Amino acid sequence: MALPKINESPKYKVTVPSTGKQVFYRPFYVKEQKVLLMAMEAQDQELVLKAMVDTIGSCVEDDLDINTLATFDVEYLFTKIRAKSAGETSDITVKCAKCEHTNDYKVNLDNIKMDPPGDTPDVVLNDKFTLKTRYPRYNSMLESFKGKEKVTVTDLMFSMSIGSLDKLLTEDEAINFDDETAEEKIAFLDNLNTDQFGKITDFVKTLPSLQHDIEFNCTECNHENKQTLSGIQDFFS
Image 1 (cartoon, rainbow, N blue to C red):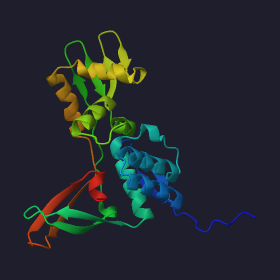
Image 2 (cartoon, one colour):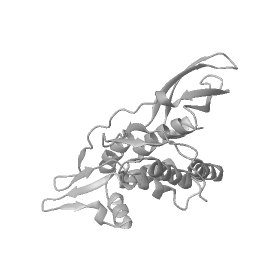
Image 3 (spheres, rainbow, N blue to C red):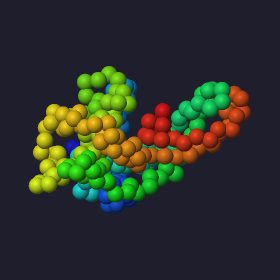
Image 4 (tube, one colour):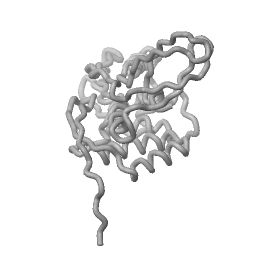
């Protein structure tokens, strides 16, 4: 005899930042929470990101291609699902800007917002080539984690730059980067001069991210702190 389902899942609505599409989602179940906890206990960034994306794929009940999600889509959607699944607050630690004492802080995840992203720019490389960009997808970040115990800022920036490549417009054709191998895309970036590559990284640096302003008085020195949490790691530290 099959056991009955104990809980009826409530439905919530959220907007995917990169597309503006509204989708419905449910809280995650124990089976998804176990995968997340195991990934976090392993302290493996690649496993954590994959677990987050898999959780989104399981909990969003509309037609959503998780392979096309931008990096900031993953951060935002996971935070919203986490808020409805394991409590709408997250206990984090933050350092005092004056004495560097570690303070406990409770973040209300429902208050976290993300501004709609702007248009992706066209990058003029020279008089013959123009690069069309796109929002880097989460799998670009996954690539930077593969086979590495520690990911540097340079690794992440390079992978995100690769992920932002959409099309290369020439005088005669439009070359789709999705049709090229990873090695060819790396070689393309390696061949750029610093000014050309800088135009791409300038776009990557301005990508949307989770941000939230907090204020607290240090429990050690009573200094009044005003800080901005930025990026998903700041909300679940």
